[in-house]
Image (tube, rainbow, N blue to C red; front, side, top):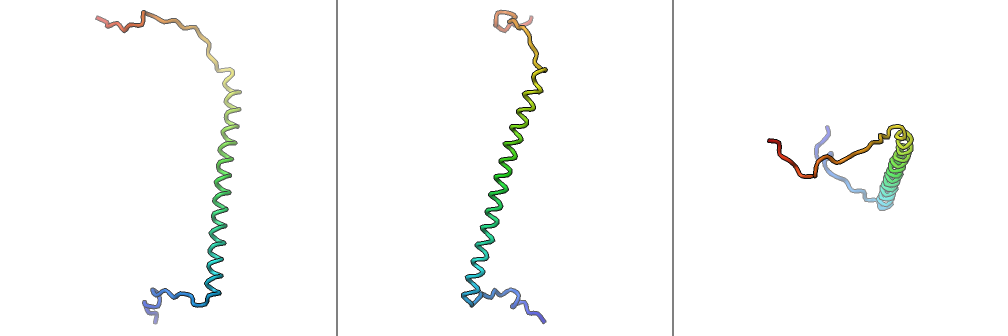
Length: 84
């Protein structure tokens, strides 16, 4: 029969060599995850910048035919008049 005390009790490792090896393994795993996060972040930034550059080139070429030219003149003397 399994006792609940044995499941909930934390047994610390007593062998110092095993402790050091597990600590080094934890640090190595942490550094791998950190490096992977930095690489993914840099790739996301590079993709965003590349997308922005490509969309600006496409939009400037597409807007050349959509320019509206016109003449404007000011109507009135600039004072707001009340309609009665």
